[in-house]
Length: 274
Image (cartoon, rainbow, N blue to C red; front, side):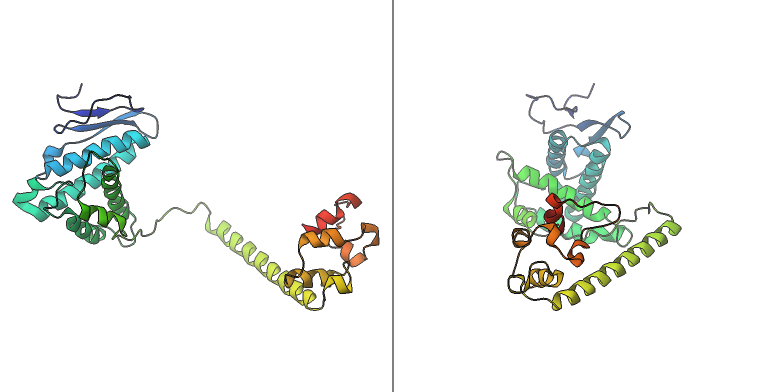
């Protein structure tokens, strides 16, 4: 049982739950990746800016309920709340108790922007963690700004509409291929690229020898390529003007015929167009 004043939510959310209390620990009950129940909590009393911490914690609980955050995701958001509230405490000192998203003073938008600017210094170069933390704080404040009965200072709203002051960085994910496999993949890609470039070069050279098929014939491959390359005809035009397959020259038949794939008269035009 939570202590009196604690704010708890289970997954899924129970409709008609009471409005969030302004005091006490905020609690989220979620599940781990293994499906085991876990409890994550935030105590606003840990911070001098306890009003701000309570506001963010309220949004954290509601947002977690709405989006069905896992326990791990809930812990990530909790870390973001804790780091930002500590930054507010450090910035405001004895006046941190007056901090609130609903008030214009102290200027929390300035503190948030400065916190975002300094956040990457605590992590390795290129880390994605600072941007993730900053985006989570912004998400909670933005969620609050959407609620008519929960005011947010206009300067903070303007900051949220701008770009986040933290670059996303890059991940260091483990490669699923061994070095040997990776070299084989690269060689195969280079071979495929070279073959594609050879085919493109040959195709453009072939098209350069053609003319408009309406004047010089619809069964000449060079004419068909010329018309497509110069946007003078469409595949639909080719299908409409081609004669029956038995009237095609060997050069045109070779475009769709292979030793292991029979070509039938009824489908020849469609195969050639494709």
